[in-house]
Image (cartoon, rainbow, N blue to C red; front, side, top):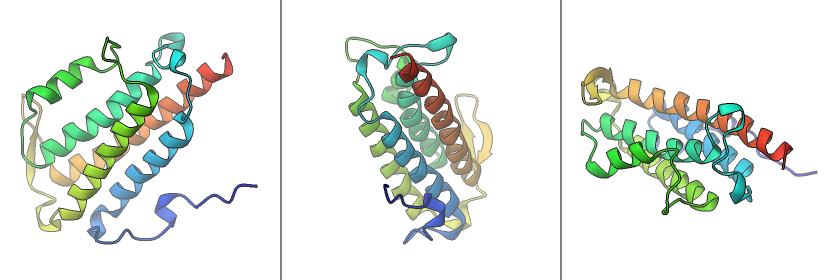
Length: 171
């Protein structure tokens, strides 16, 4: 029997993480562990398949990294740059430069590391500061962006889990 750790949120506070942002960090780290376990050694030929019209595992992996990058950019009160806009447009579209499963996992892992570092440096006094989202600059707050990043990430991890298991069942 494998001795599994409890879920990240049950392992205690993360060092140097502002108390109000602990749940966001826990969710992102939990997502990373679940993606790693689920997608490690996932067959490359299944990566871009869309069973029953669902989004492909490749899309979810691209989107997981991309959405964290975008939401944390907005939290810093910055606009998306050309590379981020290009990456957004490319999500779910395999090309000659398509990443393999391992590369997509590593890209997500790096983005989680970047997000955790940003959370650690966040000021709790600025969490209610207003931030504009997207070209329309729809108002949100720093904490709203961070919380949405956690729940959106976990939503896509759940969708990835179902899609990957459906594909693996027919493999």
